[in-house]
Amino acid sequence: MEQCKPVAIVTGSNKGIGFAIVRSLCKQFQGDVYLTSRDVDRGQEAIESLASEGLKPLFHQLDINDLDSIKTAAAFFKGKYGGVDILINNAGIAFKGMADTAPFGTQAEVTLKTNFFATKDMLTHFMPLIKAGGRVVNVSSFVGSRTLSNCSQELQQRFRSDDITEDELAVLMQRFVDAAKKGEHKQDGWPDTAYGVSKTGLTTLSMILARRLSKERPNDGILLNACCPGWVRTDMAGPKAPKSPDEGAVTPVYLALLPAEAAEPHGKFVSEKEVQPW
Image (cartoon, rainbow, N blue to C red; front, side):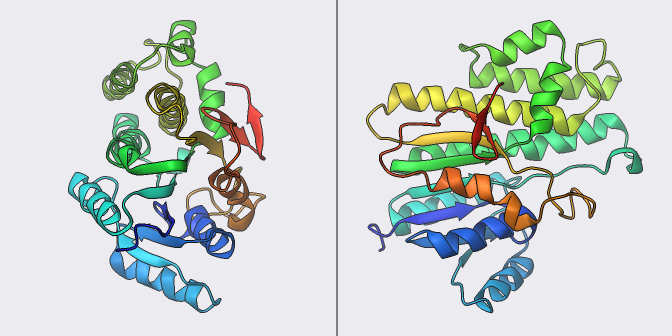
């Protein structure tokens, strides 16, 4: 049992920004770094690729859309390490904008299932495992803050409220999906972006959970933030984006490795290592 050894977990990390985050943590974090992915073969290929660079990440299968997979991983890390020091929720999806012919209702349901509801499930099962001094980073997007400003005033007030609960937020997210399936989301005050709404939800969830940590574990020094990696060249964002995956990893890794004595940022949305307005 390696209870005393620090451990970091990155979801959706067999490629793209997640892969770059694992690479950076392997170079900077004094502990075990776990690359995780849905597909075991792709995960092992990613591990071998980093091993060829002289790095030593470990692998655990983890599909955030599968509750059993989340529970299995949580039990593994609790058993082997007694908890988790760093959790970076990076796994996410996006449809290819105008190029995708899937109906908007389908895009809304599928996108929110992964980017919001599955990430929420991850946090439900892993937050109790976060050790004192731990760091939780949710990879969100500036598209979420832009989307928020395009929501109705009523929705903006709900999202920005200091007393919105996790359950209320989940109801709001489901309301968007249901409205999108009926083609009524615009009348309901929502903009035309499933990806944007999913990230608005994720950033808001981060703020809710940070407030809860401050209330329930005030002396544990855990910092939880959402961040934007920037527009990064990945399979998801395409080849025209200005940043490399390694550049996209900078802010998530910065938040994951905030020094032990740091009291902030906490419950913030961070881009380019700077706290952004919400």
